Amino acid sequence: MIINNKIEKRRHHDDSHQHPQGIAHDDVQKRSGGSREIKVVKRVLDVNAKMANENRRLFAENRVFVLNMMSSPGSGKTTTLEKTLVHLAPHLHSAVIVGDICSTHDADRLAVTGVPVVQINTDEFGGDCHLAAHVIERAARDLDLANLDLLIIENIGNLVCPAEFDIGEDARIVVLSVTEGEDKPIKYPLMFRECEAALLNKIDLLPYLDYDLDLAVKNIHQVHPNMAVFEISAKTEAGFKPWIEWLTDAVQQKRSPNKP
Image 1 (cartoon, rainbow, N blue to C red):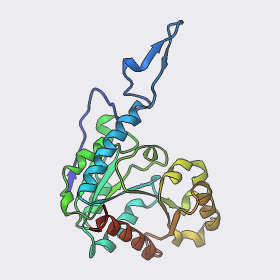
Image 2 (tube, rainbow, N blue to C red; image 1 turned 60 degrees about the vertical axis):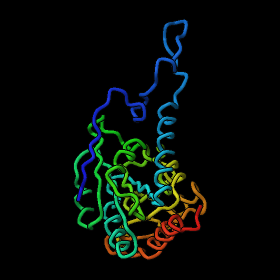
Image 3 (tube, rainbow, N blue to C red; image 1 turned 135 degrees about the horizontal axis):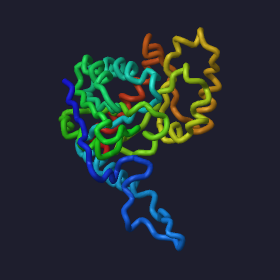
Image 4 (spheres, helix red, strand yellow; image 1 turned 180 degrees about the vertical axis):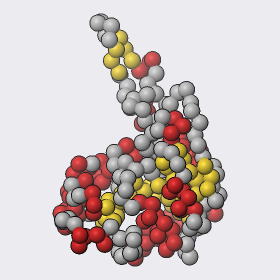
């Protein structure tokens, strides 16, 4: 079942990423020449951080492990998620929140796995390029958190904006396909710095590409030393066992009754 959780338009996007909206009159001062200078430019992120902490508290109360899954468009994120959910199904109760600017294409694919899926479309409020904490809070209302072990949030395809926004997750991962080149960690360092693990996807295509896998891993570790890197193929499921074990262990640690 897919719940299409469209967020209605609002007059004031205090915690939306509109570069930069949500700055009140008190945050501005006039210069002698009549121009204005922004005094507080972090207000958008500050409001988001407050809601993210509320989300984190809610997820902790229900002992739900929340994974924020990010990537550029076309990395194979949805296919990876489809296969991951099938592997987890015998052991964990999972749900997914899917973010897209418009359409339910990815949510339709994921619903076939049988897990609850909530769709968020951001076109209703300007087509945001990321999911913010307040939309996650509202989408989570449509899920039975008390009976979940794992909530995966498939963020909007973008290697920049999603990394800036805390949504109350326990961990972040980035999916990077070998077709995107080895330099992406260097070009988009914040994304790789903020994630706990990277999935290097589409390794089944390596025989047909001029791609240096070792250099890609080296670039990831240059930005984030000792970051967990899983070399996988979502198509063939090669390399999936270590990835599934990593995720299962993380979920079980949060579900542990001995964990405070």
